[in-house]
Structures are given as C-alpha cells and as structure tokens.
Length: 227
Image 1 (cartoon, helix red, strand yellow):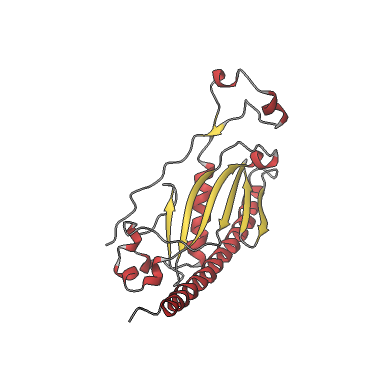
Image 2: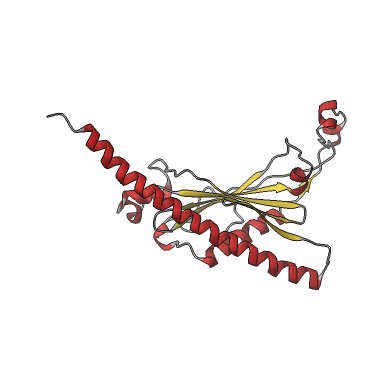
C-alpha cells in the first residue's frame, strides 16, 4: 500500500511548524532580554562618562521596531536585528555534533540575532555605499539555549549548547563585547591616490571621498571545543 502522503505532510507540518513557532518565541524573548540589557548599559555608561570625562559624549539607545534597535556611541552605530526566519545548518556545523542536539531533532533549528557595526555618519548622511561589519550572530534554539559566533573580541562560548542558557547576564556580555569590538576598531584613512578623483554621482550622493573606513574584524573560526 502506498504511503499516505497527506498524513505524512500533516505530521511533518505539525512537528516542524510547532517547533519553529516555539523557537521564534524563544528568540524574541532573548531579543527582548538583549534590548533591556542594552538600555540599562546605555544609562550606566552615560552616567559614568558624563560624570568622569566629557558631558558631550553621547551613548544613545534607539528603538526601531519589534525586531531591531540601534546603539550610537563615539562615532559608531551598533545595529541589532532579529530575523523572522528559523534556520538550520549542515551536519558539519560544530554545535550539531553534540549529544545535546542529537537527543532532540528540534534543537537543530535556530532563530538568529545579528549584530552589525556601522559608522554612525554613514546612516546620518545616508552614505549608501559605506560598508557595515558583522560582529556576531546569536543562535537561539527551542530550549532558549544559545550559540554565539563572531569576531574574536566576543566572549565565544563552547559549541556544546547544553551549558549555554539565555540569561540577562549572557545578553549583557554580548552587547558589552560588541561595543568593545567596535570601539577598538578605528577608522583608517584611505591612501591619497585613492581619493584624487570624485565623480559627480559621489558628490550628489554625499559620498565623501576623504572619509575613512574601518579596517575590518578578525573572525574566530576555531571556537573552544566540546569538553
């Protein structure tokens, strides 16, 4: 007897769709914890910086929508974005090769939150060709456990997600590390030969040829192994 394809489809949809909805909710909860941690950190930094150094230094939190917020400071802009899609990875992806993930197929699926670094003036002056740099990608599973990958300045955890639980402290560490990475990556002025000519299009679009660009970040491809 041929398989009941309709039943197979219904079972597959029931399992995966339900799991993906739960993962989306877990990711949104993690994103809100990250948002609250960022707001508190901005208030604390503003108090410390204005009291001890320069009152003109601004650390600003800016909500955009339910799944995006920005942090502006010292010429930098951090953009935190939660994606609505649920993703998975090939079997070679390190976190999948653990007993924790193998025990439940639903743990192979993740919501993801991205952290990007832009120059603040790129957004302010709408310099559309200016690059942004990915600092980190936070993957959240159905159990509200996480895996963080990104630049070396981040506090990167073990691939064994069984020990990596989403907490306010973990989200605070994520945003602190992202800010440190952005602050320590200075602008590099372009060589004079590269800015001797400017097109009318660049001028009309406010593409300032003398502006610097960030040197980029060094990514950590070898994170701590599973013990």
